[in-house]
Amino acid sequence: MFTSTVFATTAVLEDFSQGISLSKYKSAEESILIDDTNQRLNFSQKAKANKENARGNFGVLKNGDINLIQADLTLTKVSLGNSSTQQALFSIGGTFYNANNAAPTSALGDVFVRLAIGDRGNGPEAWYEIYTSTTTDFTKSTVVTGKLGDVTLDTTYPVSIFYDGTKTFTFNFNNGEAIPVDGPNRLGATSRSMRNVGTVLKFGGVNSTPNDLGDVVADDKTLATISGHMDNLTSEAGLLDDFADANLSQAIWNFDQYSTTIVNQNLEMKVHNQVSEIKSVNLIPRQKRMTSFGATVTLLSSSTQNATTRIQALLGHHLSNDTYNAANGDVMNGYEGAIETYFVIERKEGVNRATVSAARSEDAAGDKSSDIFFETIKEINLDQAYVLLIEQDGTVVTYKMDGTLVHTVDLATYVTEEEGSAYVPTGNLYAPSGEVESYIFTRVGMAAGKAHARFDDIVADAASVTAANAADATPASSGGSGAFNPLPFISVWLLLIGFRLGRRYVN
Image (cartoon, rainbow, N blue to C red; front, side, top):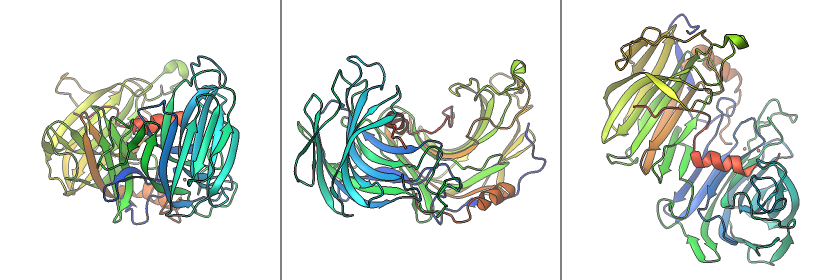
């Protein structure tokens, strides 16, 4: 099933002493959190290496039909990477109407408007943009843009956008002159009326990243980053949110608080869920074909403490794929046949415990899965660090906790308690499919609540660590993004989940 012949000798892949390196991971620090002390909403985003050309970190309002958006914006940090076409911005805006169809069924023709503060390569400034989508999934085509003024860091600026219901938008920056600007002619309502606030990092082009060795511009390890805070969000009906509450209001916002940040040289992941759904934040190493994966994990008591909300800190390891399609020459069918194993620290129904498990994906999309096994290891303590490790040798998977072997299973012969039969691969054996192989998670559900976990000392087999270090000669401590595509990114951040990770909500 696997190619390794001996248990892996592990080495430290990341100790988080210098932030999250884009050479080693597919994401970087970012957060949407209320500053309890100052009663304002903080946004922070650092570069995300990806195959797209823009990334967004959005907060979406429940009311998508307001005509006046007004807020106090403060830019606290902004920097660009090594591409002259990059941008970093903090904005208010939304989709207001459609310029192509009276009754649109897609984003084609939708008109998006925003007022932004940030850097477009000219230094910190404020500007407006009005643009339409030229595709069904929102590809930007700029209609008009203009500068509103210069911006000084750590200075609060009142900003507003007013829509007159036809095609005219009035922008105001820092209580200055009101600037009316016409967009394209309106033919109908937007396919998805939406108002949002948030940050955007725009890369230099498709497959470009702020410190990517493949970029045309020489790599200087400079990362794009944007951070700031917002207060006194107002609509035509009056004050919407002054952020006096510690948590975002479910009645006002259509997204949740979350954070992936480095605190005291540890990775902290926090997600606050307002509804009965599963929400999560994650970190995914770039290195593939690991034969071992582990981390020091702490589930913090700042997480929700009740018997209904489930909170988890999780290590996931994508072991292999057993899909076989003879008609297509042994081609894997997406995620079908993907076998993943999990090591979890959690609080479930009032009980703090450690568990190990494995599952197999039953469809190409990775939406359905079946358990191979599940075992409870022992009860654990909140605020206590545990060293978790998953190792593989052939078909054998071994789990270690604080250096002690706690569970071993041979997946090729394991007999499930439910079915009384062994797990047997359905066909030829392959290396893991897709992009996801190993990852760490913090997750909350199925009730409202908060999960807060700490990770340190990510480890992997020595060969993987050597390969990762070779690609990361200068670790980065901060992190940033063509065409802006707001709808997919908003969907991503509403779900707060990347790829098809952790497809089952482990027992």
